[in-house]
Image (spheres, rainbow, N blue to C red):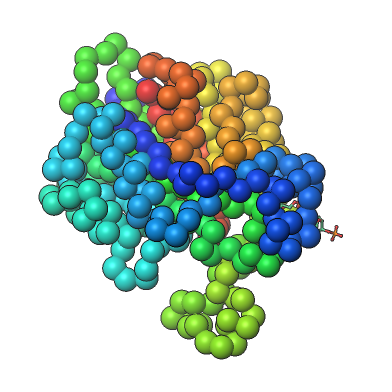
Length: 335
Ligand code: UT7
């Protein structure tokens, strides 16, 4: 097994206090039911940002908590990698806003765009920077204000998403406390297929179709998703991603203590666990409480799992993700 180059020194999360339940859609005039949403997705409630809460503010809360648990200060961070599909503004990056909010004056800061797979993509980039010598301490964040980009008149999408942020501090593995089984990232796998981009996308609002009266009338600046198609690809790709991460680490499913899949839909999660022959008591699920928070879903789940004692020292955890692009990704981490 490979000796890890980077390890997770601390994690954190920042989610809005406001809870929106499935019953709250009635007040918005959305024709849906709690039963439909639970049966098709497993979601009971999600957090929704209120005025004053932004992608950056949620990310800052998550990052401060991760830094505190890692025992570092903002001045120790030399790179901030910020995954988001819901940037607070289009230029400059949300990463530099986070850098300013944290006072991470030494850090290079940039956004990455890989939708729901973005946190695993970001950790892979961060690990690579540590391996190359370009960085020692990297803050990786997944933060999303999905409520700002969903169409609140489209019942097929608006019931699925939620807001939140998660963060992890990655550090060079040789700096970690002495251990017989070194902690760290054991393998990762990244893939994408842009030929399928239009199954989950925002048609307008970019430079190819800027905002116009027509765009606003069509509501084409908001997320559009071919749910059934996305579902099929998600099941297939998450299974492939899990297999490839194991190949990379030369492990088998029997070596995995916990599976943390992207939290989009409990049926996709169950299909992924079935493929891996991992029983559901070894799968972390919080989609019922947060909905789909895109790239924030995995780091929020990791942080909760550590806090609840579900992830304990020495455990081997498999992450896998799938999202718009399509992108898919996986990673094995020993905590
Ligand atoms: O983050 C990564 C990417 N995203 C995903 O992984 C999401 C992937 N897709 C899914 O999770 C599922 O496809 C959904 C949860 C989006 C939908 O579940 P489904 O079982 O694929 O349902 P469907 O889209 O086939 O819709 C079934 C019916 C339709 O009615 P008809 O045509 O059968 O009469 C919809 O109009 O459900 C109707 N429907 C709703 N009914 C009540 C759609 N949305 C709603 C709603 N409430 N909110």
